[in-house]
Image 1: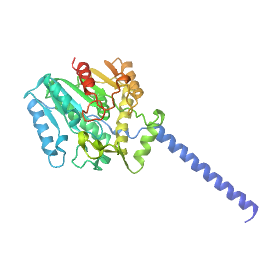
Image 2: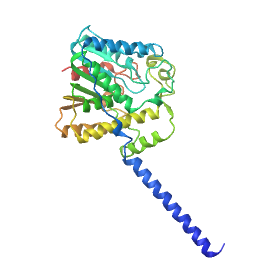
Image 3: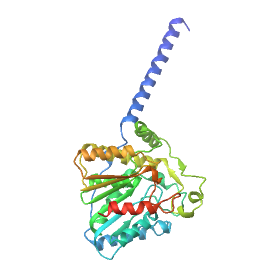
Image 4: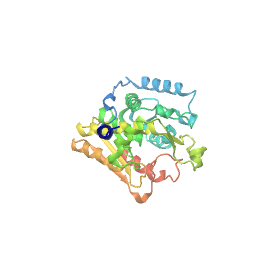
Length: 335
């Protein structure tokens, strides 16, 4: 090979590397800046006509669950037998199930509320190590949220929907979309995660959704997660794809909050100062956007000194302090 040919070959290799580097920069920039298909997410309200229709539809949901659901995780309706002045709907967190809110729901029932706790898609299966969470999508969460708001219209005159963590993101979506939700309560909402630096959240979400799914243990050393015990109703593992889909929904809520006022007349955002799971600053940014539109948004943070965990609801959670959390939550919500 003569000298001219060698120079030409080096130039071609150099050009190829530059093109490859350019592609990496473009793709990386796209993944870091463009949220994953948010335009496909839309609310489609179909509210029930009355109490009888709501009760019938809840019974149908419960019948569909019977074959494969952990009995502790079935959809729950605590009803006074008719439409009441107030209804509260609870949305459990990622990998948990309606059992999470059973005790708090009972306390609201005792206050005169009708109480509805519906199992999220792919949650609460009898096989606690199922891989079904890999199928969870933000689109399903949106449809699930609409179902809750639809059913609530027949169960109470004043509708409160309260969600924890990923359930708090769904409550945030409903706050943005549904004017027939009188009060949306976001409990430690997962708009961002402590484990991911805020500027990298979108990039990580896109990368996770591009790669094959994998599962991680919450705590493989703790018997309550791996073999049952008080947390035997919850999954001991979580799907990274499922978690990324929750973040996808969070990006949709954040984008909408930046552009338009929420539809819900009242929003309450409750955070925990000692939360090690979610990024409270991400929630604060959503609150600031809503308040900038003049929305009725109030906030409360449990002091870090109390040492409350991210899941401040489930009595089976290790190091739980529901004796502190429940009275304050009832005080804040039942006004």
